[in-house]
Image (tube, rainbow, N blue to C red):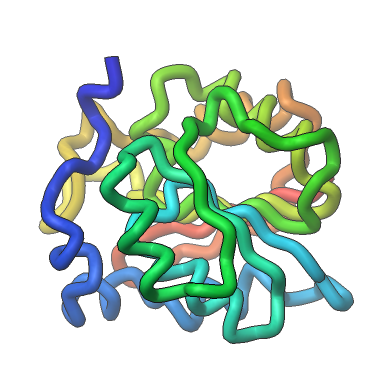
Length: 181
């Protein structure tokens, strides 16, 4: 179980080349585009809090969740105002409609149950889910093709969860899906 989960050193999550490949600032702007005054965000699979930090810098109250207990204190160092806890995408420890936005940065391909993870996201989010993922193609960076998700697979699971694809943005190395309730 969870054999696909990221387990490398925390320092590698903050590598400047990795941050540039992820286009963090652009991704945050795209997720927020068109949303009036979002107040709360849950960063699922927060890692070292890289995206949580950028969303918090926009004045959004941030919470984060990660399956790896070692990530929680690391994220807290970078985003001291956020509330981080241990947990998995398939069983979110939050009330229905608890957050304006949910964000999954390079996480969805690692979950054990795609449909359950998106169903839980739909339950907990009020307005928008942003999913940053690897494109479904062999690439220079990222996991092997068999661990990647096709757009069709994400869209089908999102539809079952009651979400609709609002936008799909192809980035230089990644794909950002923006799904609204």
